[in-house]
Image 1: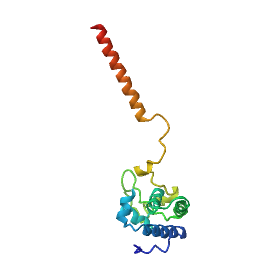
Image 2: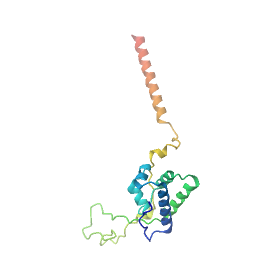
Image 3: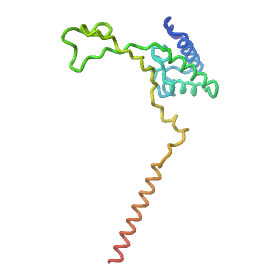
Image 4: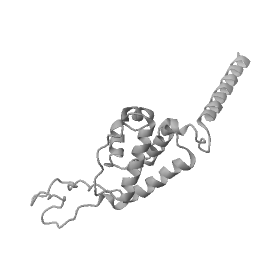
Length: 179
């Protein structure tokens, strides 16, 4: 623990502060990255990327680390605020060059920025739309939530079984009266 690789010098202050605090929180758990991965829905390699500032963590990963570390209430909310501040300024990786549907242009290959010769195209900005967090949550985090409004599948199944039973009884009663 504590043997982290140095953070890049060009990181914005918000990102640096967030990652340093995340590292301290992780170290405070006493867990290895593999053990942390086993206790959350995020793999060891994902935690390596998050804690080395090569990729911003999803908000749910930060919440999962706070739960594992025993943080609740205001302390956990502070990490949420730090996450929001860091994600706004997190450095974006440039998008990989996109090839046209028909393949590379015949008049030239893509340059280092993905612009093809003769087309004057600038590379597409991957960060223009902002960071989108992963929409997935581990199933165990959903246990505390209220069920969605509307008909519950179990109740619908019960009504279907009762209807089948009533039809079966009607068929048997009809067969007995005719027989």
